[in-house]
Image (cartoon, rainbow, N blue to C red; front, top):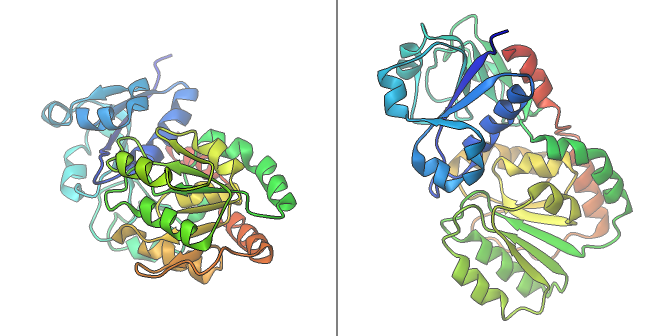
Length: 321
């Protein structure tokens, strides 16, 4: 039997972060387990930024555009591409799936996925073909299998939490403005004495600065690069981080969080989590006046864990297989 073929078009870098690669990778890994041949259409810079992508064969984007090939599924997750690019591949792909979270441009696709919490299908009605399947909201969040497997165990752990002993700081795949340093400063100002896990992404630009800063702290601090995020999320009692795609990893494992807005495309999820009392949200110039008490921690855990069960990939596989 000839296996099905899927291509994935995305980029990742210090400027754009790793979110596009991570969510596309969840689909690719699931298809691989089901016997598909999955290939990544992306620049060499993306592979250098995220070495783990080498588990997939890379295809040069320019060569792919110049000589398109037939495939069963073409997944496009790129803010710089739109209906013109998608139409070009219409005769080559049996299905085209677009992953988006901006709802600001037209697409020619069979499946539109936007996992933004609070997004409504009507936001895309005039932007996609009439027969397009529009999948929106946190029910369709793409999470790696490692997170899904830890959910039950993590929620049991949260139920036993009585104090904040370990804090996770994670500003996503890149942190060009060094929000990590601000988070550390907040904890120092609060007099927090517990352990701190610091995730600096794939190619940290502020590694020396953070290393220098934590030498003056009395906390047990550990810096993680290319980190084991499922385990770090599980072991933490509180997260301070960006309002990007890693929000759903924390929600799935019921990890209470303090959010910082680090990019414009995070505004909708930032506001919606605030309104749902599922996170503490800091404005750009605002300081964390105190760590949440245990009653607040329990409330944040309860509200956030209801938003994402980690099973969105199962719903998506029903559409793409």
